Length: 114
Image 1 (cartoon, rainbow, N blue to C red):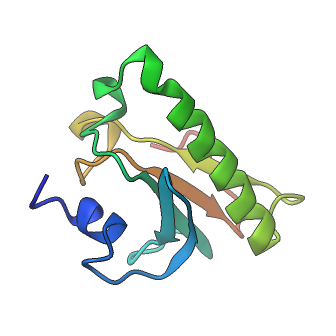
Image 2 (spheres, rainbow, N blue to C red):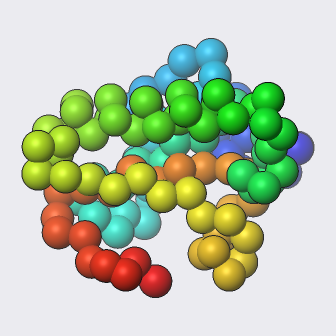
């Protein structure tokens, strides 16, 4: 995806405040944070949405969750609590069509979220 902003961040073509990266994912601070901790975890491989993944790709989602936990640990919010969210398509709240997981913490989260 040549015009995908998250692909460009993953490729290092657009700068971001990266807090974690490995060969499968990149995690960086959201430019419009909704909580004191708001990090996006994206796969390096492009998927528009989680609905575009096959069952064989789901190990990547598990890795994204593990990275979210590591980000929360580094931020010191695990004990008080944090939230991970993957939005899917417009009604799910997705605005950038590259699969990404939000890691939110550092404040009380409301329920229901929408």
